[in-house]
Every structure is written in C-alpha cells, then in structure tokens.
Length: 448
Ligand SMILES: [Zn+2]
Image 1 (cartoon, rainbow, N blue to C red):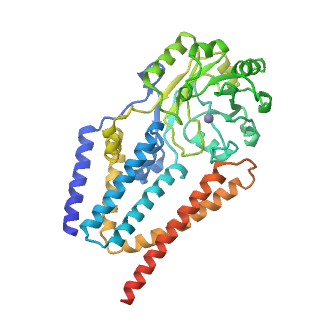
Image 2 (image 1 turned 120 degrees about the horizontal axis):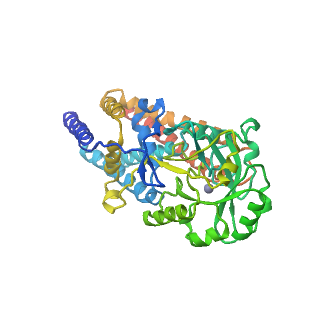
Image 3 (image 1 turned 45 degrees about the vertical axis):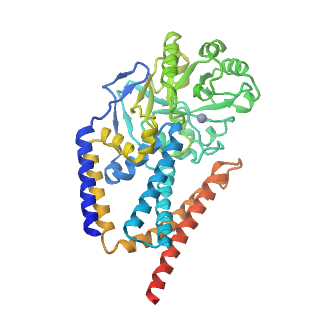
C-alpha cells in the first residue's frame, strides 16, 4: 500500500508541475472603467504568504469567488472530500465504522478550513500606487451592523493592510459606528457615512464630510433621502444596483444619485453586459464609479481598489462631491461558470491558481505538499492526527472567548451572537468528540 501511495504521490506532483509549466500566465492589474491594463500600479503580497502558501492561496481563492459560485463550489468540495474519504477506506479495506469515522474526520477538516477562510486575520494583497493617487473604499461596515463580525479597530487594520488611504464607515441604517474610531484618525483615514434603506426597498450609500445623525434619514423615499442628503452637503452613491435591479440608471440619475458602484466584493455577480452598460452610462453622464469591499469582517482580502488623483490633506468627501474621475483597479480574471467547472471544482481552483501564481509561491506550495506527504506516511502521523483534534478543540475554545469579549458590550442582535458563536461551539464540541473517539479507540486496542 505504501509503495503504491508513493507512486501515486509522485505522479500527482509531476502533474502539478506540468500544469504550472503549461498554464502559468499571470494576470495584470486592470482598470475596470476603461478595461485597460495599467502599469504604474502594482500589488504586493504580505511576507507571511510564502510561509503558508497552500492555506494562503486557498483563502484568497475562496474570498474572491463570485457570490453566485458559493453554493456549487461548497457542494463540490464536500462531494470530493467525501469521495476521497470513501476511496481511502475502500483501498485500505476498512470496516464500515472506520469509513464513517474517515468521512466525519475529513469533513471536519474541510469545514474547519472554511471557517479559517472567514475568520483568520491574514491580509490580502496591498496596492502600491503613484504618490498623487488616493485609494478609497467608500463602503464598509463594523460590528455595530447586524451582519458584521469585526470591530472598528480591525476594520482600520484591514483597510490599511490592503493599501487603502481612506475609507468610509457605512453601517446599515444608522451612523453609530463612526464614533467608535479613534478621534485622531477621523477625517484622516476614516470618514462618516451610512448605508440607508429607503421606502423604495433599495439602500444607498450616504457619504459625509462631517458627523451626522443617521436617524434623521429614516423612512424616506429615495428622492426625499437624496434631496435631504444633498442639502446637508452629503453625496449619495448607488451600491450593488444589480442586487435589486430597481429603477433604471437614468431614473436614478434624475433623482440626483452622485455615482455608482460597478464592483462590490460582497456581490461580484454583476452581469458583464449590464456592467458595461452602467460604465458607459456613468462616463456619458460624468458620474464617478466605485469598486468597494463592502467589508463585513469575513476575511481580510479584496481584489479591488478605487483610486483618483487627489490630495489626502483635503476633505475626501468634498473632493468626491466634485464628481472626480475615478479608476477602479482590479486584480482579477473572469472565471468560468459552467456546470463542468463546478463538477471538477478542486481541479479548476488549482488551474486558476497555477495560472496566476508567481514561481516563488509555487515552489513554496510544492515544498508544503512534500512536507505533508512525508508527515502523512510517517509513524508519528497518528499522534498528529490525535493531537490535531485536541488542538482544534482548544483553538475553537479560544476563538469563542475572543468573540464573546468583542460582542459582550454590543446591544444589537448581531450575527456573532446569533450564528458565529453557536457555530464555533459546535465545531469545538465536534473536535472534542473526535479527540475522545480516537483516545477510546486507542485504549480499547490496547486492552485486546
Ligand atoms: Zn453594505
């Protein structure tokens, strides 16, 4: 069995290297507004990447997926994981109970990986740009929005990590988030804003040059909201229009909208034809366009930066109000949405990975595969397997305590309280069960 495994592994490694040699052709940064590649901007990966390449590249892959891909991708990864666990049990001629154990264990590993994607604070690429450009993110939330998992200081860190000079804090339907940021950074790095739901069942981004009370803008129609915001010196931007398809671009412009999102990391599923129409419309009508993180604290990696030629010492909202020309810089290639792609998702993910990866990171990836293989076929692997469950139990326990501490003073019914902590407790308990199962199996074997 071991001999066969070594052969299988060598073939796998060989195929990986061949795939890299054939397909490697990295994408360049490009400007979504004019669809052209750009040369005076670049991205820098954090130093940690080379040390943890397999997990790093998986996190980046998962966090930059189209929103409409989540479901088929997750199903595909689950089916492949279960199939491999079954195949492994079959080849090793194991008893049925052991089969179930293998499936359970491998699914736990997969779901743990998914939870890492969402929660582990590893930074994505950072934008490097010419000095006269300002990089902004006009749409981001913190813990005081009901669906966000990270407090203000993490939002600051995440934005700085990724190379944004300035961002707007735009909580859902209130303006309470801005007050939590340190005073010395207000109007330097962070600006006040809000994502307000209107009576028309759409929500819009309000960006302000000074602090305001969000309650003054409740229960208004879009028209009333825009008029009131304008009279108070704010600008109003349409976020992810493609989420609702409510009102035409012209209708929105006639209502006074000051600009549009054309890319949103939470909703990457903007139909290309519609997007092109919107870009043309904005150019024709001199409306600024934005690519945004719409950051909710899930992961710390984005692939878009809105930049404009501006001055960081001048109030950013006032510069935006002059209908400045923006560039929406993307580090991204369009991915196939065919059924075949999702059937073979792990292989497709690897294909997109080798297509873009730089050689040094790919070398790190291969070294990791070699190390993992060495460990798996070594005698001490059984101890790793056993103590990994214990390690995960402890890791999830600490994470529960961490989230408990950050939400204990939050009054709103936040997703951390409703979903994240219960999910983490489940993970913690399941890993604990796996650890105890392994332990009792070992001691029973000892007795017989
Ligand atoms: Zn939002």
